[in-house]
Image (tube, helix red, strand yellow):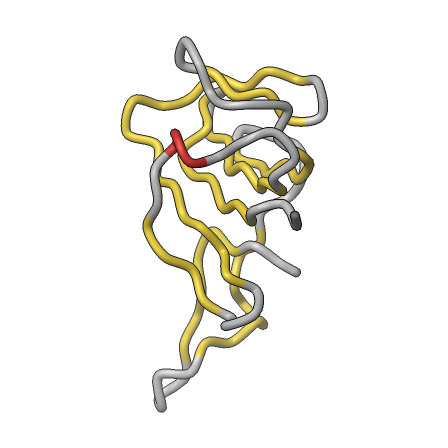
Length: 103
């Protein structure tokens, strides 16, 4: 799975990988994927035993892999064991895409 900062489109409005900009795992803007250690608290979330500061306006999306879609969610819904992908910009998490752990 690739995460893109920006996408290029053709004349038919279809997204093109060529010329689009991917997030990487380092730099000023990067992504982290792992398992949430518990609920977010005190403006931070822990993923794989590393704490990340949440932006005040962090965007949160729940991913439904069975239906190939994601919907707006809230930070309070993320629990221990859930899979999480964080987008970090300038030291703050600006977006989270998460999937509920299997029961």
